[in-house]
Length: 489
Image 1 (cartoon, rainbow, N blue to C red):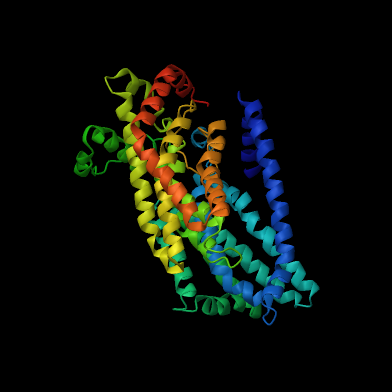
Image 2: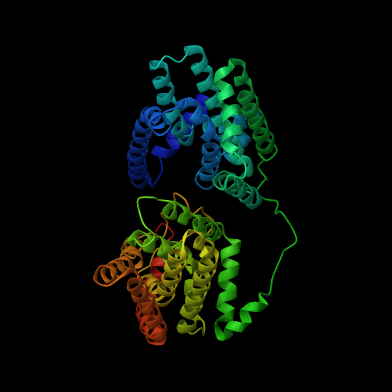
């Protein structure tokens, strides 16, 4: 029966009206998949020697075992956004004499051979081969690798259980952050405890039954969830629940742009893609730890300015680059109403400005690394507010591609065009170059003052800048409306 299902999907792909577009996309995705797999295999082959070099007095396998929880949590974190359950078109099959249990098992079996599962194994299989070449017992390494396979499958099926839950995502992200914080600030040696647990999978062969049981349990939970929902009328019944509304009264302080802010905030929270952007932006506040803990770069280097612009302006970039495509589904309706286009753009600028202020406030704890970190983030925030906000709105006038808000933000190129790539140059490259120039000619402090002064100048000229941007949007209004109506863009 599984062979029959596979043949149906094969025919569905080649008989599709959009075969050319689908085939080209598949070839492109295959190219990147092969490139990534080769890169991971090379990384896995060199991981033993890398651990041996960094920790010369420790067993590389034991050190890898210490970091296994971070790997599993990070993989689950990535899968939450990127991996979806491979649900086939089951409704036509439900009228045929095919058991629902068979259909359910096929869906879950397909997910078991997902590309995401091979990503992890592409690292651990070469690592296991290197272990064997260095005299590690074949039986122990074999059962250890088998345990890793079952752990990867467990992560695969657990992802489908928590995928529709924002609460589960927050718990997952919080756990990952808590583990890192406890270890970083030497409060609790997490890696010491977890290292013993995962190294035991190598020392005691029979313990592979634990990951086996976990993967089997996760499979059964998914099976029970899907089996109860495979019915012809499953999508006919509307799930009713009490609507939770908010009048967002605090936005009234923003005057005439308050109605637009309310619409944007509701749109952000009610749709998956925009809500994901918020979570990503909040998570990126930790990006500073990557830079501020690098011994090779001083706090006064240009790289830190790049980090400051990125941290305080991550929502500005993620959300702003798709203005006004976020409203593409009803943009023609907005433009046909008695709505001042200037107020519409002011509301977008206001929302972006609030996000920059919030991200700066969240970055204040980085003063722990030195006063330069706080000064960099403050100057970067001013630059984002005064310069990058109008710049991102200016590039928004080039957007003509529709966005489906229900789709995930990851692996989703919908709405992406040349403007989204070009805008990176003025957003991130220009302030770094300005800072580097003044730092080279004068000093670090003058470099920060230069980008902060440009931000303040942007505030002074904001009215004129918005006037010019509004006029540009007005000239391109009908082109945008036509582009947003093309659902395959």
